[in-house]
Length: 227
Picture 1: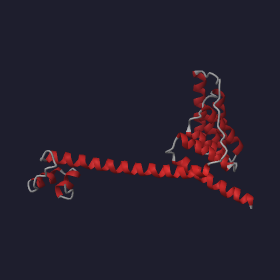
Picture 2 (picture 1 turned 90 degrees about the vertical axis):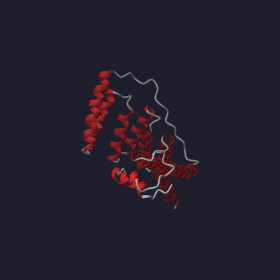
Picture 3 (picture 1 turned 120 degrees about the vertical axis):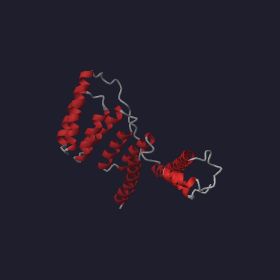
Picture 4 (picture 1 turned 60 degrees about the vertical axis):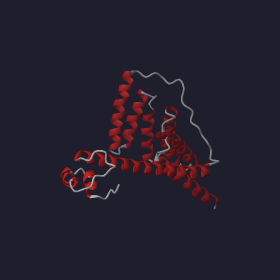
């Protein structure tokens, strides 16, 4: 079917008046099941949607293939790096609903302070929240980010590890862990943390980029040390 006929264009755009005018002067197209104004419009718009979905599926497949190729190449470079697994905590304390409510209130104060870039106040608020609910890995993740913003790598690392112990299958926890190690210039360990996050969330572009940058930084850092 020739998609360039005027009636095709008008139907695809949903221009009913134009389709009605063109229908009388256009020879019937056998591939269109119902040769009427509504039939032509419905057929062409359905065909257009199918083509759009096919294009989007192709683009998504290409992205997935490119991402897999990138990860394969980076994994080859990553071989031999130290593997430091985080072991989940056991025997977590039971937190009452009242304590969880207080933790949520303190967290909200921490979030507001963070938005104002008042990181010390945010840290204090998150610490209060952790005291009420030490089982919430998100609180440790948020406080780790505050320490990172203050350039306190060791403190950021402690909280990032605590986060991962509580939520070992959370990709963001891996990112916090890697970011803290990167700040401490422990680039190989940072690459390991980012890589573990990629294994959890392979489509996470932020983790893929961080992993690649950590590999490159490690190569440059150790090359400088050797010199």
